[in-house]
Amino acid sequence: MKLSVIYMMNVIVLGLFGWAMVTYYDAASQFQRLMSGSGDDVIINITPIIITLLIVSIIGFMITRNKRRNNKGWKEALLLPSELCEDDEREKTLTAHACRNAYIAMMFTSPLLIAAMTLQPVVSKQFPAYPILVLLFLPFVQISVFYFSLRRKLK
Image: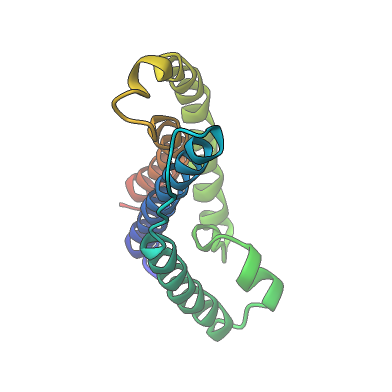
């Protein structure tokens, strides 16, 4: 599969997961208000969860089927990320370089996200799902740095 397609699928799955978690967080806060006596009912929107499960299942099936067509074992097809398809020494070197860049990016991103979490008490009044989005920014940066590093080296 092309690297850009894999990147877009990863970003879509990450976005859908964030959407489902925001919905779950909203339901959990409604349940907490109900238990404290200040709420009357709990409304759970299961649409994001169903859409996320459906799309993730389709994407997972496509990736697994593609890997199995390339004579990969079941363990490799199910557990190894699609970005790590290394067939020769050049690809192993490029992947190692991209992994190094993603690791370095995490060293800079993690303290910034921890600092962003200090704003949570202020921002949570207007945007209760702020911590979820801050935490989802970490894998987004990692995926993006890995992809752009590989793309730059492949061109």
